[in-house]
Image 1 (cartoon, rainbow, N blue to C red):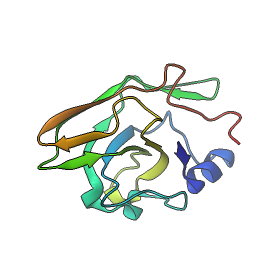
Image 2 (spheres, rainbow, N blue to C red):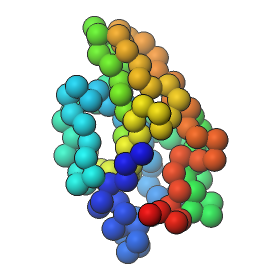
Image 3 (tube, one colour):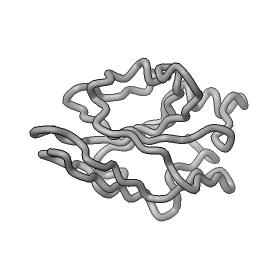
Length: 139
């Protein structure tokens, strides 16, 4: 899992309130764009890399652990696209390019990836049983 530098800085300085804004997940095709730690907002992500987008439901933040229900991206992709990652971000309002990036999960970080040869398929992602990410004790 990759934490974005701007998120870590914001979390440590009190600029992020993940309980006060919607948290969303975007399904990413790394053949188009692979997020890197220096990315900060959705403006840094090639819009063509986003294969699907969902809002996390039942988001909790308890003892520094962010968790939510597992997610399903519905009717994803056309042709032979592959979903290699899930991008977590906070929806800060309009415009979309201001949404703040939180973390990026790749193959092995969550169950359900990679999802290959997508052609209007559903992609289900199962978060780790102990939570999506830990904000306390990040090293």
